[in-house]
Image (tube, rainbow, N blue to C red; front, side, top):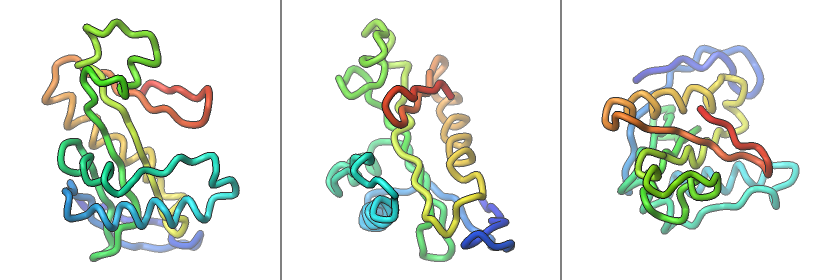
Length: 153
């Protein structure tokens, strides 16, 4: 899927980028972008980074979309299928365990500072949601942000 970024570094632009499903070969780029974005945060201690091993596993088993300008990864979104795992957000929300298979975690939406202001965090969620709703009849998608910020998408 192609997108057109209207802003780059806060300035008007018309940068065509490609959105594609990613796999384990993209793990190093995901890990590097995560760390670059975290380092630029005003309070990086509020963001819990993932390990490269976990990111590689997500890329192998979950829905991971990357936004690329050529070979450069500028944004990504990870939708995790946790099923009966205690890592499923449904567990933290008190949902009966029998329903957990119908939940997915909108785990990460990371955007390079140069590309902010283009709606990529909102836009990255939509393709993941539509793909999964076609595969599972009843899927609830949840995103957890800062403490106390639990939103149903």
